[in-house]
Structure formats: structure tokens, C-alpha cells
Amino acid sequence: MNNFSYIQADKAKDATAAKRDDKSAAFIAGGTTLLDLMKLSVENHDQLIDVNMLPFRGIESTKDGLRIGALERMSDVAAHPLVARQFPMVAESLLLAASAQLRNMASIGGNVLQRTRCGYFRDTAFPCNKRNPGSGCPALTGDNRNLAILGTSDACIATSYPGDLSVALIALDAVLTLENAKGKQRQVPLTKFYLLPGSTPQRETVLEPDELIVAVTIPQTEMARRSKYLKVRDRASYAYALVSAAVGLEVQGGTIKAARVALGGVGAQPWRCFEAEKALVGQPATEATFRAAAEVALRGAKPREHNAFKVEMAQNTLVRALSEVAAA
Image (cartoon, rainbow, N blue to C red; front, side):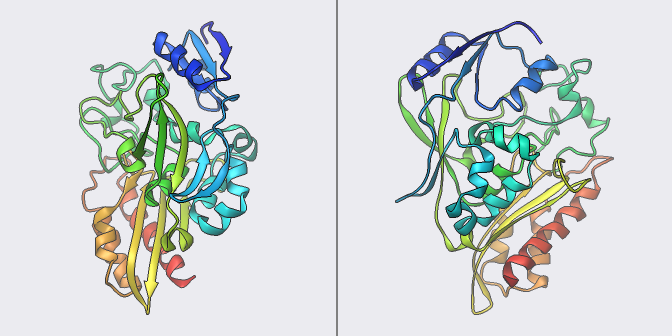
């Protein structure tokens, strides 16, 4: 790890101004991902700006939905009664992530900004278009078992967001509040926040260099209350998803009136399955309906040599998640 300076900001405008003035600086809250990447020399920052003193906390119901401050810790959010009762898939996604110790440290804003676990990205001995644009993507013909099958490009096939929370949030139409160095805030739906790799995989989100995530707001809906996050991984704990599914349903008289579906572990971003949702609405809440929707969800998959198994695994995971929600 290279040497760096450290400052602690107690005002948002001081933190964002410091980041604006130093392009090599980085914000740090829990640091559970950032410090790992700095130790590996994947990221190099000459200054870290500690934002933990900023007033971006709180979990409360508002007219727009449940508002969660970006500096809330994962464990606190998962345990909050409002989250557990009204947004079960969010609580489940948090409790299935990382370890208890990491959940106690990691912030919600930092979790949303997790970077890929692709081994080629994290090993500077290899070329990587995310680290060094134009250098190539060895994963295309190399070890791609854990990488994406949806939304990829010839420049990158990484599962860009490796976590769990944003899969649940993107299924529930969550909105991020961002604030820049001028103190101006803007609202960005999570469905618009992540960027597909295309020819510029080094740019992963629409977040500007001087912007901070202030909060995430989740609309309160019947689908949020009747929801499920299901994660399939190589081992029972402390492992990233091979495939995950976040689903919510509104069912009346056995017929699906509304649906929300997202997949994790398979996309170049947390993958919202809009077409699968359309395939569910108006249909009976049966396994046959769920199976048809799952086929639609994976219709555009482009698997590689080592990750072709994810197509069937994702379909089966989605069917199981929908079945469990429908039966609840």
C-alpha cells in the first residue's frame, strides 16, 4: 500500500470540496472494500477523506418511503424493525452478506459502491480494462466461472457489483440521494445508477467525482412487504453469490397483480428483470408461470466456457424464490 494522508470531515461541503480539489482522493466510511483494494494496489489514493462524522444517518418512514442514511451500518439496518417487517428482502440480503464483523463496519453507501471480485481485476499482474482501459480482458478466455452472463461486452464480463444489498434495492425501485461539492442534491433511481461496461468498463456508476451518497429511499409497497432474497453460493457463509434472486409479488385471488424481480451474481450490474416482471403480471401464481418468467429473465444470457451453469441455476433460483413468496 502506498503512503496517503488522512483527514476527517465534519461537514459534507468540506468532504466533497476536498474530493473535488484532489482527483486522487477517496471517501472512506467503513473501508471494508477500499482498504483491500489499496493493499492490492488496485486502487491508489494519496488522500482518504473520512466521512463518518457527516450527518448521513437515520432510518425513518417518509412520504416517499423508507429513508436510510448512507452511513448507517449494514447490521443496524438489517436489525431495524421497519426494515425487517416492511422490507424483508432487504434485511435478508444484508444478513446473507459478508460476516458479522464486516456487517458491523460496512456502510450502506459503501456497500452500494462495491467493486467487482473478478480475479483479473484484483491481480495487477494481469491486464484489465477496468483498471487500465484498453489493456484487454483475460477473463473472456480465462477463468470466468464467477463472472457475468448478462449485460457483458467484449471489453468486460465481470460481475461488476458482487454484493447482495443492491440486488434487493434495485428490485424495489430504490432511489439514491447524491450531493456534490456545491451542496446540490439530486435523486437517481438505482436502476439508472449503474452503468453497463460497453466500451468503457472503467466507469461503473453515474456518480460524479465530487459526489457523495447521502441516503437511499425505498418506496413502501405491497411487493416490498411480500418479498424474498434468495442466495446460492459455494459455501453456507462468507461467500459471494453464484446466483441470487430478489423478488416481490402482489397476488390477489391467485393472480399476480404486480411483480418485482432482480438477479445477482449473473449481471454486469445488479440485474433488474423487467421482461420477466411483465411475463408474471396477470398470470396465475403457479410454478408453470414462474418457470416461464425465469426463461424470459435469462433469454439474453451470453455464458462463457466456465459459467454456462449459471443459466439453469439462475432460472431455478428465481422459480424457487417466486414460489416461496407466493406461498407466504
